[in-house]
Length: 328
Ligand SMILES: NC(=[NH2+])NCCC[C@H](N)C(=O)O
Ligand SMILES: O=C(O)CCC(=O)C(=O)O
Ligand SMILES: [Fe+2]
Image (cartoon, rainbow, N blue to C red; front, side, top):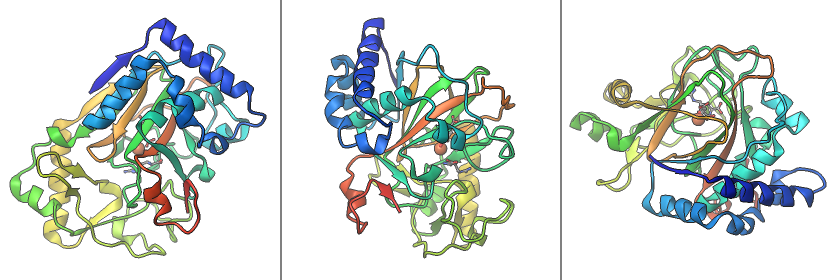
């Protein structure tokens, strides 16, 4: 994990940049700003930019910025992402995340997720306590690759912490730390797996199931080509994994999934994000999840902003028929 802690002066510089940009926009819409943030990010503190560029080039597994500005008069935590969207809660924080993220990659979103927004809210929602989505609380969010089903899933998933009063941990397994038996590793590297949209993708799954069925019971409106769970350079491989939304083609492949899950449990690390911390998780090198917690619904709940980043937005344009940052 690589970490930078901003000095007070650097924090003030980021806040001033964000305030200046915000004062020039009439209606806050991150999608309108997204073409500009890469240029604006040139005005972040030099030490921060150098740190992020180095992270990108070295493929740092987990990159943390501490000491980013969070509004001292931050509004209460919205009760669910849809309320956050409706009220426009945490706009300056969305912009701060966009500015930092733009140094690592190009921001994009999903038409099927959180109403097609570019910046998401991660906060607990009533009725979702035991769901398999980021709005859950009482159950652990299993270790996953973000948006495991899609070839254009993010190179990074980034999380900016606005509140975390109960010190709930975000969990990680770095593929470099995984001690997989050789035969399991070999099986995972074969194209014997299918990956499905997770339950946060509304409309991507035709029959919403209750989460207890095997992943391949999720009948969808598109074909899911078999792929491998481990791929890329042998000396520095990539991982694609979400036990809740993948299936193996045969008994051996299913067994490899279960063995990998057991190995994850032995290599899991945790980071407790504090307000002002942003983490950029390399979505090819690391699976991430979250510990369970008790939701409050009193305005003081844990609250993160989330942003997906792809290293080159053209990978997305190339498989689309419109030039959009929102994957249909
Ligand atoms: N194993 C899982 N629960 N995967 C889904 C992860 C949560 C999903 N990314 C969301 O935004 O809600
Ligand atoms: O809440 C967290 O710490 C992680 C949530 C997560 O995995 C996500 O929002 O994709
Ligand atoms: Fe996630």
